[in-house]
Image (tube, rainbow, N blue to C red; front, top):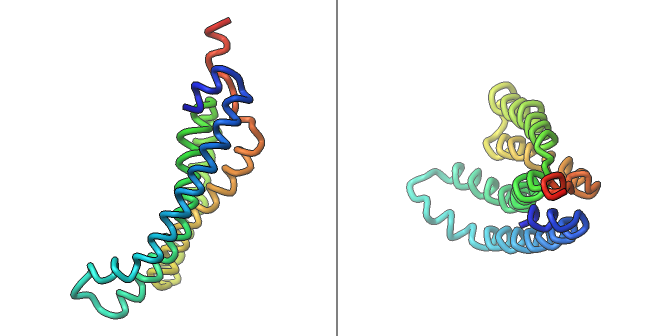
Amino acid sequence: MVGRQLSKSETSGIKYSRKLTKITLISALIVSILTLFLSPFLLRLFTGISIETKVYLQKIIYIQSVVTVFYFVNNLWIVGVFRAGGDNKFTMKMIFITTWLIGVPLTVLGGLVFKWSPSVVYFLFCLEEISKAIIGYFRYKSNRWAVNLTKEITE
């Protein structure tokens, strides 16, 4: 959808991406709030687990409800916006850096080296998504991704 708007004009694509970002943020907040409110019911689905495991699971659900916003926005920006504008090199570099220099090392350190609790290790794992959103935000705001890929074909 963003690519189609970019083929009309870069400004049209940028405006459309802003609308989609607003819709995505609202949707993500709704899902996050629902997850928080439904967490007691979700925990009841897991029978036969220890209290300690339920406590960890509750913390992980809280973390996930916050990180959901980052997941939603990242999916929109990376797949729906940056790639539509032909910004694949940036996307590849960003995913490589956040996965292999942030997410994997922090998760390995937290879980295998420091032996932190599962909820802390899960938070460290989620820092990959958070860092991707921060880096992606600056790219998104710069509008450098907004390139009409059909311009050369039509001219």
